[in-house]
Image 1: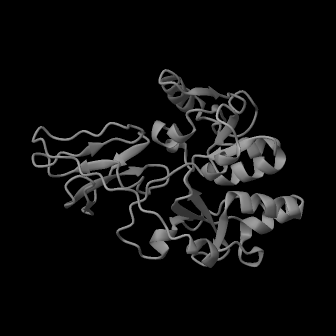
Image 2 (image 1 turned 180 degrees about the vertical axis):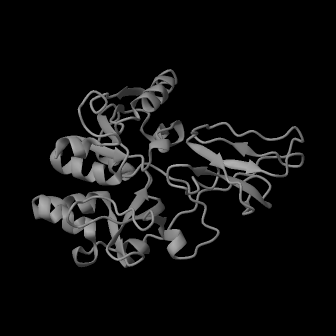
Length: 283
């Protein structure tokens, strides 16, 4: 089965190029959720022809020479950080961390990685994506079990975004690495570690605080557009088990473009379950 498919329903969105409501988005077959605002195909094949595949930085436009009008990313007001500040009494993930690690270390990590709490789901967490210029690119909402620390997936997949909660219909989500704002505290040429899950980045920062930990947020976001802001650093990537081949292929291609990425096969050669991440190995 392919990882992604074009939506076959009748639902259409505003095209990033022509701005007409003729845009068909790609769907992640694993989560059955739309990928983002830019991966997809415009149905106006002759007059527009916009087409962008997942994990591909190239945008194809028709021969009609229609200028590509890609919208600028939207940013959240920084006041939202105070409005949705983290609260242990309303946040399952924080309670899990406090039961596992030293409380002072936990609150230090939560401040560093900037997370919040929301009643979108009972006990849900907001992982704020703040870029290297301190712009708030987005707020990813996820929910966790306060005892096991595992993500809640039933009765439905608990992943959403703060702009959807606030019904900001014109918000143009343009993601960045979770924790990217912290790179201002280190020097170009230093080593950073990249994992998939925001949860993993935070917990690894508690387990191995001597390293800078960032997260892609999904296995498909290990790509050039997300990694460009850290191109001048030495990068060690730790893909989840079963994703090593895909991430290593991407790393090899990017290294030819001036990146310095080492993709670790630690989990691939370790006897852990399929889909396990670095936290599953460490704890």
